[in-house]
Amino acid sequence: MEHLAVDTRTLPERDRIEAWEQALSSVGGPIHVDPIPGEDFSGELSSIRRGSFFFYDLRYSGMRLWRRPVDVAKMNQELFALSLTLPSCSLHVERDGRALTLQGGQAYLFNHAATYRTQPPSAYKTRTIAFPGRLLRQRVRDLRHFYALTECIGSSGGLGLIHTFAKHLAQGAADWSADEVCTLSDQFLDLLALFLGSGSAAASPCESSESAMRAGHRQRALQHIRAQAADPDLSPARVAQACGISMGYLHEVFRGFDMGVEQTIFEERLELARRLLSDPRRRRVPIQALAYEAGFNDPAHFSRRFKRRFGVTPGELRTELKHPARAR
Image 1 (spheres, rainbow, N blue to C red):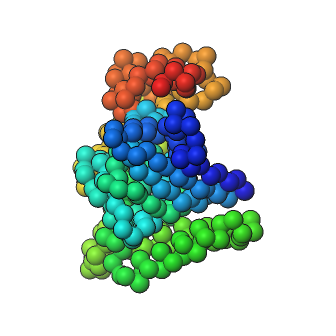
Image 2 (image 1 turned 180 degrees about the vertical axis):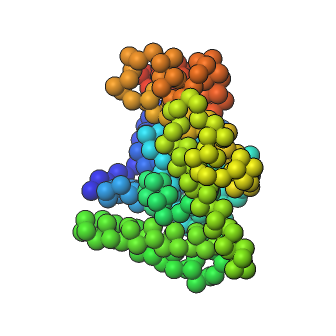
Image 3 (image 1 turned 90 degrees about the horizontal axis):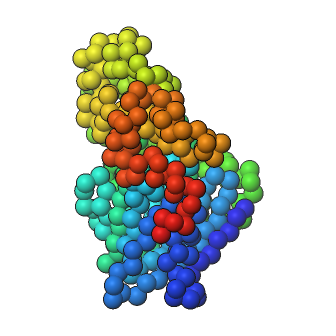
């Protein structure tokens, strides 16, 4: 069990921003803190880590938080977080090109490993449970980066059940035994998966059957892409052939999602390249060699795509990882 408690009001003013960035990074990954001129900068975090789960209470004001592409590139794992916002507070969020307002007293599920900006109009307070995304992806196909649970869970009873269970789990996080935490955490993920998987409107039996078939084909395509991303010859045609479906149907099952087939292939290669660049054991391997290892044929093309995705070139990321203090 690991405890962390930070209150910027108790720190010298010159140390507050750096200390707050470090605290937030410890529970959610690297993030940039931008004080708002003329406002009172204040942050308070109380966190408990049990296994791979983080349970924390967070309050902050007088600042914007920005998870930049380079911050995402430096994350060593994908984290999802269920945030229970406290009543009488709100938060302005920009993510995926959309402006959102998180309301008090609601529940939100979001992916930390995605770019976003936040700004609270007043003190923002939340109770959060964060966990590795892979644990939820084992239970739910096609996870989105963001969910307002009031919108995707049809019944008020289901939403109330998630609220109650999450609060119960978080409040007892320091007292549960290791076996209890493991069991309750699994039940929490199963509960989330149950409602995330059934949140869409009811469909006819024929529509449900077709939807399940399309989802199955898409899942097999994704698994093949992830397993073969390092193959420079991987293409939509080869994915379709491996899955036993036509090219047209392959593109059809990806329609309506954030990325098409070809973009998904490049995204998986970029993620592989990011992991290789972040691996301390590969620091002496030339970037060009890592690009080839990740499935890219053209190092210049790789560098352009990498910068477009993460906001820095592969060389700049490697430098930041070697000398993090220079990035300030």
